[in-house]
Length: 119
Image (tube, rainbow, N blue to C red; front, top):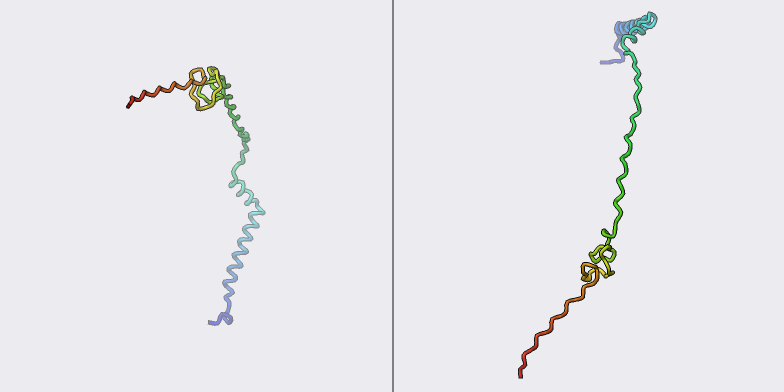
């Protein structure tokens, strides 16, 4: 089929042109009579304005209380296990100490048992 030689149907064109003219006529009529304004007024909702308060952040929590001050009963400067209030001697850590913090004398070594005489 040769589309270049095919006759155009002028009836189809007239129908399209008539439709476009009809739509333009309706739009012009709506604008002139105020019909468009009435339609917008019916469609739009009334605008209500409300004041929104700014959300305030809660105040920060109070700071924690300071730790209690350390007393001599809490401290052990020489590391011997006796607190500073009761410690009367400065001893190196790891040495045996008594309840007053002073070194305990080492126990005397037992005397060796006498050997029987073999003679």
